[in-house]
Structures are given as C-alpha cells and as structure tokens.
Length: 439
Image (cartoon, rainbow, N blue to C red; front, side):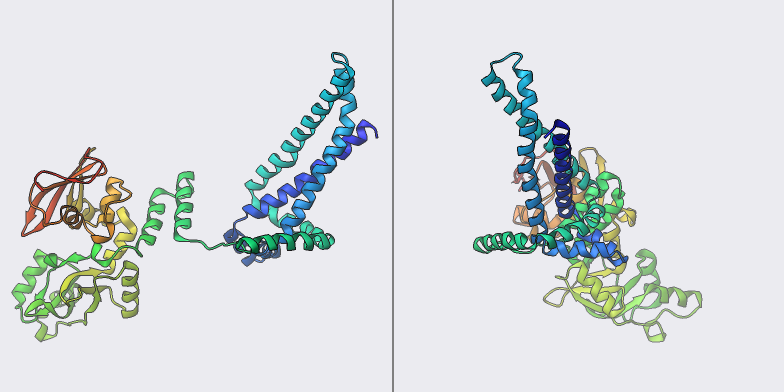
C-alpha cells in the first residue's frame, strides 16, 4: 500500500470517527425544551431526536461500535504506513534497532495526535455550539446504522442493560426540570446579557412566592386602618385623610370581629356624588375574604382567584386578626424594586456603604437581599427582622440590644410597646452569632 493510499484511508477513518463523535455529543447536549419547541413547530426530526433521548441505548451502542472500530483500524493502518518513513529518517542518526523503535513511537504519537484533534476535540466542540440542529441532521444516518447493525446493537445493549439492573441504576434519562434549574438558567442568561438583571430578579421573585408566607408582606395588625360599623361620617372622612388605603375592614366592637370591608373607590364615588358616607345609608359593605396566616403567597394568589377578590383579612389559629393583604402587596413582591419604591425606601434605608436603617417588620427575605446574605440561622422560625432578633436573643429586645451574625451587627434603635421600630445594621460584626452585652 502506497503512502498516498494509506493517508487517504486515514483521512476516511478520521472523518468517520468525527461523524460518530459529533453524533454522540450533539445528542447528549441537546436541550429537550428546545427540541420540544421545534417539534411543536412541525419539525419531525426533532420528534425523532426526542424519542431517541428517552431510550438512547441503541444509539450510543452504534456510536461506540463505530468509534472503537475506527480507532483499531486507524492504529493498524497508521502504524504500518508511517513507520517505514520514520525509520528511514531516524536511521540517519541511530542504529537500525533504535530507529525502528523510535519510528514506531513516532507513528503512534502522530496518529493519536491527529485523531485526537480532528476526530475528537474539534467535532465535540463543534457539536456543543449548536447541538439541536446537528442532532437533527445526524438522526437519519444514525437510525440507518442502528438498523444495519441491529444484531450487534441488540447484543451489546442487552449486556449494558444487565449491568444497569445489577447495579440498580435507572434505565432511562431523568429530564425533570426543577425551579433551581430554571433559576440557574436565568442567572446564566443574566450573566451572558440575554436577560436584564431586573428581569432575572422578577423570575426569581416568582419562584420565591411559594416559600414566602403571607405574614411576610401583609400589613400588620397595629398598622391596619379600620372602621366601626356605626362610625359617623366625620370619623370616616378623617380616617381616610389620615390613612389612605384601597380598602378598609369594617368591624363591630373590635378589630377581631370583622363584618366585611369597604372599598375606597365606593367611598370616593359617594363623596363626588354628594351621597352620605354611612353604612346604614347605602355605603356598600363587601364580604371579606378570610385566610389563615400560614398560607404561602402562591396559595394567597389562588384564594384571590377563586374568590374574585383582591383584599383579604389574615387571621391566626385563634381567629384573631393579625393583618390584611391586597393583590398589590403580592405583585409588589414579584416586581421587587420595579414598583413600590417608596415603601421599600421607608423599610430599608441605606445610610452609607456599610450601614442600613431597617424597619423591624421588614420581611427577612428583603433584608437578606439588601445585605446580600445567603442564609440566616433558624430561618424557619421567623419572617421579619424583628422576629430574627427575638429568636437570636430568646426574648423581646430592648433598645440598644444587638446581635452579630455573618459579618453584620443588628442593633435595636427604637422600640414602641415591645414592637421593634428601627434596627441599625452595620457591616463588620462577628462571624458567629453573638448577642451583645446588652442582651
């Protein structure tokens, strides 16, 4: 066999090996979501790739048969064709025996290098660039090879399946996509510039709805503006001016006996039309949606949808009112700093690079986001910054009490009737949780 013929055979073997390498990496790297989208758009090849991904045993068996056969043939042809020429070259400096050994090693290294670059590294990097498109091009020829090599494929597949069963490993690929997977993809998209940082944050906030309790965003009991059913018009007008909200609970006797709620739009319309503001004179009283305080924000949205309401009264296990929540409160959580900027500025005020003034009722998730803290201790025992301080101190905090954790110091600045109003957070506290001397 002449050198030209040998080199031509080696080139064919390299191309064949590159084909199998490309077929292997393109199938493994293809994203099912992208393939499903293509299949839904009418591309039959994408549907075929999806079916192979569900049971890829035969496909990869053919790939390995091809790769190993080519590797063996390449070694035989390459060593036999190149060794004589390397031997003649090395005989100029070495003895015949030494030249033969050096020629064999040179042929071996040359063939390995050529196959490694052109039959493995290059096709695999090429396949990673656009795996779905390449997988759809490869699926036809590969299915033909699966049919042609069916006896061998069956034999090797049965042997492999037997090993999987003996080891107790799953036979099919698990393609379940979790919320963590989606968040990881959006973070990667934000880093790559495909998604804006605010868009990525909104997506993260949507998944956070399932873990945040309603109590983390509600208007707490002591901040609720409510009416007595028999309040005169002057009291109603004064309360609206002092505390403007979209809806007001209407109670009998005290706040724990809720009769319903009145919509601010109804009151506004009656004022403009000159009608009296009195519940006994036509001011509509709506039935209040009552929800427990242990619901997640996702469950709250479901309750709003089922009841066709956007305002709810929150009660605890003792049927005592602990707060109110509106649809706007939930959506503000989703949108983050895109909406509700004034409220956020009131709750979390950054004084300088290393200090923040934070309201005690601020949801702990917002505090973590503002301070860039991944985790806090005993996270399942509280929902607000005030709750964090109570858990860490194991008592109701007093003014000047402080707690250090994760490089931050949390100092109570103001307490009103056992309620923590303001907390000063400074960067530079101890790494472990250590209540200050005042604690």
